[in-house]
Image (cartoon, rainbow, N blue to C red):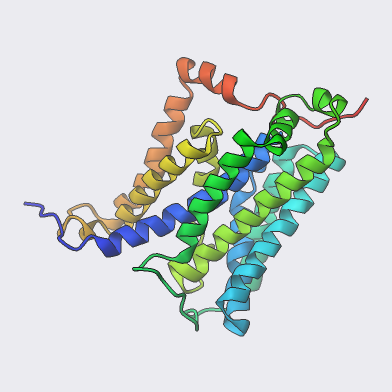
Amino acid sequence: MIEISPTLWPFTTRFLEVSTILVLAAVGELLTQRSGVINVGIEGLMLFGAATSFLTAQAFGPLWGFATGTLVGAFLGLFHAMLSVSLRVNQIISGMGVWLFATGFVTYWADRYTGPLKATIPRISGLTPAFFIALAVVIIIWFVLTRTHFGLKIRSVGENPAAAEVSGVNVTWTRYFCTTVGGALGGFSGAVLMLSYLGAWSHLPTKGLGWLAFGLVMFSLWRPGILLVGALAFGFVWQFAISPESIFPGFPAPLPVNRMLPFLLTIIILTIISTERFRRRWALMKPEALGQPYIKE
């Protein structure tokens, strides 16, 4: 008989950390897509953020690690914006290029460094400060997109960039800004993964979390509130797959089977998204100009 563990708080803090990682990466992509740019390279942003933050933290401390990971993510977001906005390269190919480059370069560059993180991250009742930062970021992004004039500009650029340009909105600058900020949040997410959740370098530590974050954006219908709920659900499933005994001591399923759970959930959600009823609603919510380069006439 499976018994429920009485000590759930350590498990709760861990799954909230996973949710924090997903929220930061996904809300950055949501902002990027709201401006009409799609970046499938979130996994690459997180990998670079994780690697640079770990190596910097080992030498200068965790605060500099978080800063470096965020800056590297912002630079990669800016690079993606240059390719997709200014040079009008196919946005899917550009994002895949960032991911593939990160996979190869980080493997070559960071895998030679092993061992645990030298410094420890301060916590609040077991929770990483990044959790509260992530909640603040979701609220800020929601407020900016739905309650400010600048948010209206972002949404108009994502829906109809030609009409936005006629209205006086700088389409290029807006897309550059959103893609760069989205990249910074992706890099910061990787830094949180490495410095707060894992605490030691391992080969390709993201393990697909970037792709889950990308799927969360579509699942949320580009709404920060739904995205937050989805991230909490995915975070719970991810951590349960790693340590089910934290809730149910003696849980019978072996670890390899448990590790399939987050991706099985992803398949189920993608199947739901693919239904005709959902696709009709999804099409109405999706930014109309998403993934389309803007050519000023």
